[in-house]
Length: 264
Ligand code: GLY
Image 1 (cartoon, rainbow, N blue to C red):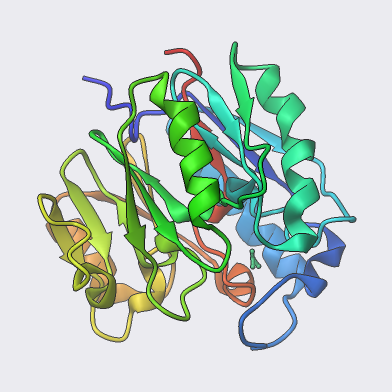
Image 2: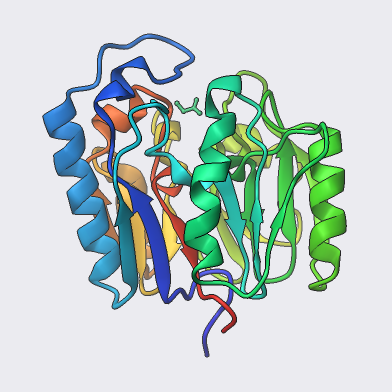
């Protein structure tokens, strides 16, 4: 049976721009190496394609340093897509750049048009609901507008908190299957996953909480062996992809793609 929260026919990625060196970051841990970033990005796209999905790779956008992180510009559901309103001023324009690509694939593309802000990185879609973490990038007004828009498609939205100092809600969690999430202990402690099975990232490996379940694969950043071994032991087919350069910009596996099955 196909699961709407992790069975996907399509993905959209965008090549990293040279301007990525000016991308936003909470702490400066060094300048991303463009060649290594490009190599990791190609490996990531290859992993998505290996599941049989059709993956579109858009050209780099030099005007938007963070535009490789396409997830923040839109939220894709089966019934339609919603163009976000990113809370980082330097990223606002990324949403309009993404709209035509989704309009080409979806019958219905809606937009956040009010004063609120919301980024895709704060949204975890599970089989039964949509969880949205309030954060420095996503505010109540943005969530309220989003919830009204997706109500027409029958989605329940639940607001949760993003841990202090964490960029996005999904920086600290991922969906693994219809009943299981991977999360840091600090996020799980908030109780936001009550009713789900939760696997915790290994101690000291919190930076790998942002993975993606994409069809048969759990795609996770390389370099977190204890969490990888837990996932393999739990029966998941794990693919590791280098993420050292995106991590310098607080980016992870979910940030690098929009994943969807339009009008399935
Ligand atoms: N560098 C990714 C972001 O801050 O949105």
